[in-house]
View 1 (cartoon, rainbow, N blue to C red):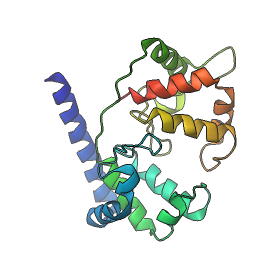
View 2: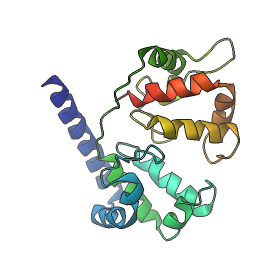
View 3: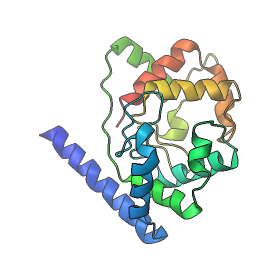
Length: 204
């Protein structure tokens, strides 16, 4: 019952946030749903749940962040052979609407299995690694990985997707976001990368 109550409260909060966005931006959610049902759902699902670990969960992600990523895909600032053709015909208004649509969705966290690995991930997420100069993830993304309109929500994200993005930052293959991530990713060991990705997936 307690878990159901927490999920219900989360859904109410998401709905309130979406309503606030709608009031400020006057986005067209009907148009957003039309776009999602026509293309986005194939990879990200209608609820932003993304059944495949290769594609990111968009449920609960900040609307502004989603809109900015779509704009970057369209301009080529963020490189993706998959997302560029999907975003090329989107207008700024449609990008904002898609952001609001997915922000209002709720998907719960993933249950971790390897407790020792999760402990390493929790340590890195909250404290970094003083011996290698690695900053904590929580210093930017928050103690619960909820992020901000400028920085992405990480909580509940697929571990595989997190790992892939960290590797892209390390190789300078992803350059559209905060340049600090290049330094962060370069300081992560393979174990730390895997562990922190697994821990992030358990956050809600």
